[in-house]
Image (tube, rainbow, N blue to C red; front, side, top):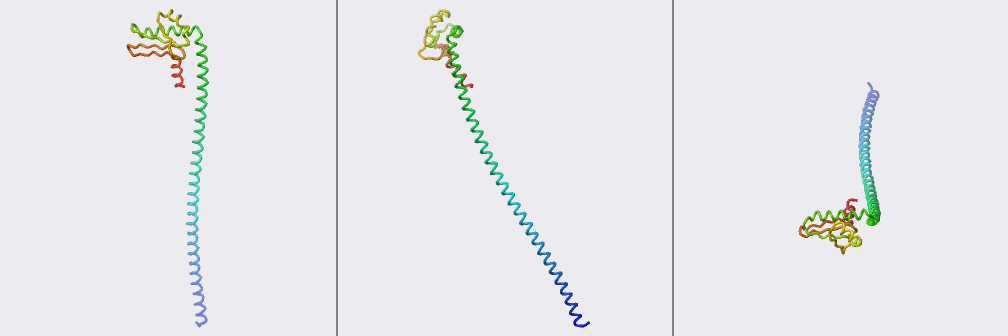
Length: 186
């Protein structure tokens, strides 16, 4: 073998070794780049997911706040409607009570309540009050019940009030008290 041949063999061998080493280096570099790209993509995806979750949480909070504001507004509106309805109802009841107080049924109601108060008192002294608006009915009621009645200084809307001092008992069958009781249940 001649030197030229030896050089050619050596040249081919070194070129083959250099080609294989460069191919290996290129592949290694390509793998490193792909790994870096994958890592970058994973980090970007994680960041995007985190931003998405944070934005979703923010939107949900805003939505909940708006819903709660609307619920509060609706409750206020409902309360206002209830108050308005209650006021109208109570006005109608007062008008109907005023009409009722001019009937024979009201006279009978007073007689029944006076008798009930006398029955509760039994033998003990009882002071039975009627409303100032019922003063003209006093004599007729006293005749019907055989009880001395007192006209109250305080307007209690109709009905009667009775006091049994010996037992510290107040019998309150006044319309004002009954209206107040009903108003609290509405």
